[in-house]
Image (tube, rainbow, N blue to C red; front, side, top):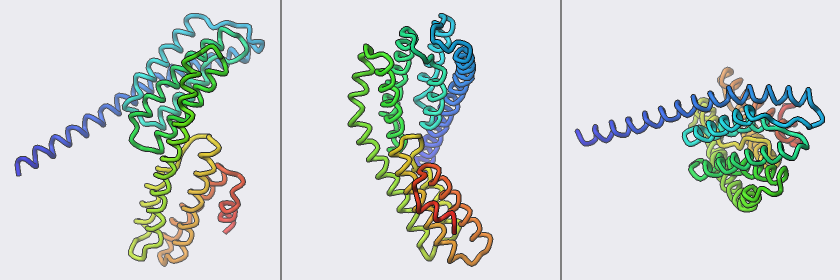
Length: 275
């Protein structure tokens, strides 16, 4: 009895430590995000006032960007993948753009550092969908770094190394999504599952839908969302409780709308919205 209690307490302590680490990481990311927001404002102002690209970043701005990148990378290990990608995208927008060679070389260096950090973080990610997203974003940044500064060998090497890994990770992520969605579809057709059970199952499956702006991911996500919307619509037709039926139809509409946003050519999703 006491041995079990000790193990339970130890497990509880480990979970508390993990949650604390996440909270601390989130705070550090938010601190960096605040700095990034100011950097983005300054960069946007600079672009508006100096369209010819002749202006060279001053040392104080470079130092501010360096610090923001370091803070973001330092907070990554315990942060959620979606939050990491969102903040890195904001940071990317704060980097200088234009034709100035010095600025391009500097931006390429930062993009290369960010790509490497995303790759390293992906190796620790246990969720195959999120791992695929991290690697895809790392590849995107490495590609852009290599384009903006062809002499950046680190970016070139990382980009080349990531080509096959991104494809493999995307396949693993899609397999995980297919499994999660199929489980939810089974719940929807089960005769002994309540509407609440079905909705909860679909909420869990939705977490596995890939995020981001990659065209292949968007097409795949749209297809899965359409399958989920259709299943919920079909389930709603068998629901006698008016309130539950409305909830099922509302969720079906929500998924169908997102499916059309992620792939405008998805006729099945468009047809669902007409029902």
